[in-house]
Amino acid sequence: MDCETCSAATAALVNPVDGASYYAGDVIPVRWTLCKNSAEEGDRITVSLIAPNGDTIVLATDGRITLGGANVLVSGNLTAGTNTLRISVMHTDAGSASTSEVLHWDARIFINGGNAIPCDRTIGYTQGMTYDVRDLFLFLPFCDTSTVTFSLEDTTGSGTLDGTTLHITKPGTFRIKATIPYDENDLSVIPGEVTATLTVCAFTVIFDTNGGSAVACQYVNEGDTVSKPADPTKYGFLFDGWYLGNVLYDFDTPVTADIRLTAKWTPQSFTGFYPLMYSISIAETMHGSVHTSAKTASRGDTVTITVTPGSGYLLETLTVLDRNGAEIAVQRSGETYIFTMPGSQVEIRATFLEDNTMLNFFVDVAEDAYYYDAILWAVENGITSGTDDVHFTPDAPCTRAQIVTFLWRAADEPVVNDAMQMDNVAENAYYAEEVRWALSCGITTGATETTFRPDDECTRAQAVVFLFRYAAICGMDTVTLQELVSGYAYADSVPDYALPAMNWALAAGIVQGDGTNLMPNAGCTRGQIVTFLWRTLVK
Image 1 (cartoon, one colour):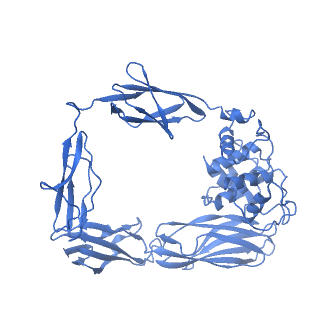
Image 2 (tube, one colour):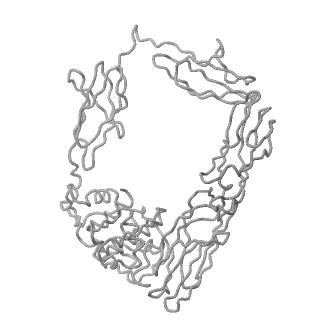
Image 3 (cartoon, one colour):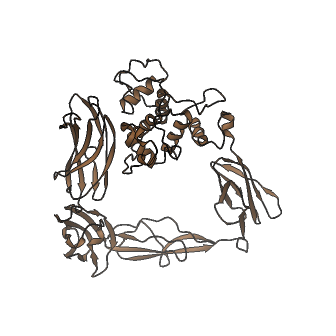
């Protein structure tokens, strides 16, 4: 990947990477980070993609700092084979209105064979057979298959291709090439050539299970052997093996003709009777669900119970009763429970209680609070702890150092070796490694070029921008064409740098405001930022 830069800008192209491979109709996620420190108030940064044929697609227009991406459809402005995509960054000066390129990246990607995807197939041979070669390709909906031509490239068998019909006179492999022409009137069509292989085997081996579970047939060439399949099953019978006629088949025998192998069975002995099946019922439950591995079972069978508590609830009791009301022993097995079926019907009863786990942590986090699930998740995953042993203090303001720390822990605490560029971040501060990481990957660039201001209260707009940049780095889709900010009161109070992030957060349901006001410049509380993070990564 080539990149030409000037000293005024620092940037990175995250995707696409050199050598990436795509098919027609795929979406190429273009992701970048950009910080142009010399931009003045009112200046604009425009990021565009220039296709090999000269088409220009504007990906984003932003102000001082840009981190984001856009999705580009693989279509007719690309060709089959290697394509060089240029992602160009232009700077428009607010004073002079002059526009100049400050940097660009060249990414070389590979487009596979136009608007068709190869689907190699294997079939069995019959005398005088024909095959429609279009079945060897998956054509995208917008491809006009009537313009596609097919040719037989080579074969180890024998046959001729007439249009789309392959006449096969001898089994073997047949390489078929589909050629998709250029259509100047339809740029969704990518010209190119795609090759697929049809393997025609000499013989077909059919497995007749004689009433048992199905077994797929096999295609083999002369002299090859049949792969022994998994044994079929049949209720009330034991599998004796595969027979060719009345002889047990030897799977080491070379195949010289089409064959049909038949399963033979021996009835199971149940001392004169077949096992009785007893019903398994589940009593009505509240605040959770119960499922079993079977609805009926015979005596001695192992039955598995899966219990799923509702949100905010835990399993309290799980009981299995026989027809006389006697309790059956239940054992824990990993995430499920098991019991041995008695010689009668059973009923399963479960009760659920409210999950007061958070009460064991914090007395100031109510179960019905909007941030309850988010704080429980954050504490259990080591992303944050309380302000003391019994308080989380959800309404306390969240500082810039705290939010960077939360994100760093959510990212599994990565270690970077970059030098600390911020004067007011001491090397022994609890958040030093976190700030170093956030600076290195573009989540933050500091309050100024040399200060981070770790103890400053983080606004809701700043918190959303941090999350937006973190989501982009994690490969999440941060591109939205929806403009939702304007639908809220005081929309013009959202800072320009935060508009793309705020639209993304609204579209993804991460931020909801108070229904009419986004409050972008209000302080972000500990409860709010943990909730934003939970909605981004979990919900």
